[in-house]
Length: 316
Image (tube, rainbow, N blue to C red; front, side, top):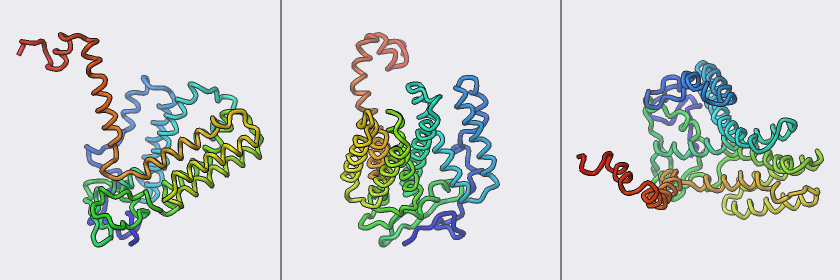
């Protein structure tokens, strides 16, 4: 079965999905008013991004459904690029290295698009049921989930699963034209270039070769789902060997950007709807279990009692 998205005139949903401009108050996106309110408290780069995002949303209101989805992916990916760039420029001076700056920005931007679109594709399974090996989609217009349902056309057909929440939809092979796959190839290519640029000044031909190797290794990981871990490890080894041959000063460090992108891909491609955020919840629970006794000891019994009960003992 080929799943259809709201980009088609005949949507698979039970009723047409409401445009993004008419979302409910509970699902209202971050507005430009918030940006203006906090502009004096945030870095200038964040204020510029907020202004850019507000203008893009104004354009989206008059664009077609598919154009809105494409622009939404680009804008969301820009948020990841901005946060990553802010952290990087605090550690690395990129003012006189424009090529490195562009390579890093493309890597982070493309990775953000790959991560968000793959997660949204899994979240769309909340509106699906499996009927005789086919996905059947049901969504109401007031739910305003067109950004999720617009990705379902690239999901494969389930094999033996009965519950969509238990299905690792991205673990198998998905079309290379899926947005998360295209973005991953771009991120892998840019990351293959970013590493050598951050660790030194490679020759243009050598830099282009590592970029091509990074992209090809990413494509291989996409089309060989059963051996993705082996492909990623082999890709890192080949990329590192090429960097050694090219004479890069720190080849291991130069491989790390590409390896980080692909390791993240291995994680989110194996997720299920019911396991999204499970790692965060476990980490939070572990942190609470470890830090609670420490905080109790540091603040003392009297203060701890106030924190736990909302007032001194005996006041209630």
